[in-house]
View (cartoon, one colour):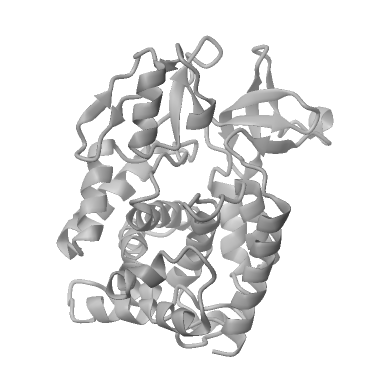
Length: 363
């Protein structure tokens, strides 16, 4: 199977994975031939893309990091601020990642806009766990890190949602309110004796920058908790690569470049290096266009080099970008779900970066 953005799905294509509605009931079964009506129905449910079965990728199975049942339970627990539920779910997530023994997992985002906050928290938890695994954390620490990921943004539930979801440019006053969310998250967890200090400090400090320009404490370097350093990187990566009603997503490679550009000033260099080594930037089943114009599908990620996967071309040939003797100049130009940014959007993004940096330095 392979992934297609919903706007590229055609009638007659065969669904490669069961699709679910908001209550975790099956909406469409795998193997269903899609009609125009069914495609519109998926769009109405907020799906941004689907998995398709075809001759080229019929042998390519995509392993889910977490099942749909566990995902639904996790989203509900985060939304309800269910600490006990989140702790149990973190154990299941960590067990699943450790048992898989691979990072060639399903990290393609099928979420809708409406549940962004909770999906974002779940994605951050999963990505943080993968990075922690790469840093050889113990199973106990991985579970704690996963909990911190799921709860890192819960403070936003105590902030006016019209500010959190504002589509336009926020004011300095609104940004000051948003910056309160790490402290609010910490305060919510502070009285829980079963939540370790590692989790609490990771939640509190996940917006601290290496150079001291972050918030809420303005910490620098080694004074920032290791959990917070990891959460900071994966939080920004997932936020940049997520599509919202008011903005297009960065391409995953562009989001990675942003992280690399902030290495040592915003982000811990070692965390960035581990992230690049272990997190699959181009997930299995993702369609891509190469720098020579050829198209294909990611069929395997190479451990230790997330930007140089193995690709199955549309003619069935497979090439491994890790073979630098043959493909030293060949790169992935773009992914199929990438939408080109307009000049106005690029200008807006650059201005937002400047505004954010200025606000951080004059907090």
